[in-house]
Image (cartoon, rainbow, N blue to C red):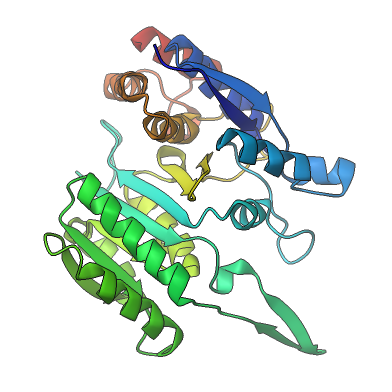
Length: 334
């Protein structure tokens, strides 16, 4: 019998609490040996306490080693730094893992998409290291290190080997940023030599975006720096129907945070209309990470069954089901 694990729940903002509660219902229905500790992050807790990432939340994740997180809001152009970025940096969650796979009976322009985006999570322009030089002039720092580039490349190749994937593509802009992206590529090339059974290629990021919308089947595992990863992973989600249908994980040496990668959807928050699929699929990844493959497979199969049936869908996918009705259908499918 599996030992019970404590999962830190971070419901977040907007529809976060609704999709989190729906996900917990499904995990309880599948009898996953989990207990939950609720913690806070995001703009709602910032309004009350002045911090969008309380120290208590970080300490709880460090103790538990694993968290399941809903979306958190980040103001544009002002306000506090992103709670997501803060969580990744505080816990050294250096790898963002985004599998992107076609969902049964969800019609898109593409069929049979199956690729993985591996994104370095701790440095680059996305880390938000910027300052005002003089009024009217702002400088943002792009930091690329050998250590971070090597370990994200190794993560990508290890994941490819574990999942029996055939190719890793390093994404870059080294034709312009010859030193920073050049260092990233040098590290990827060195790591690639240790995995001769896996094909390796290099793709300039703008060309990658064009190729993804023309011939996405050309790609398998994509590894890239932080900012490129943020953009490309959302583009890839669009290939299979949007951010509501893809999972996400932020993984470090000792801890992992599994999260919905979509926004907080304040326009429907509290109305019971949110689609919990993204967080449920992230929970499937979490179950695999916790070595609970049986429960993971059951939840994944239930999702496939409900989608294949075409009868119970939330509004974002053209249906009329509420969050509760969709969750009830999943539990029935179990």
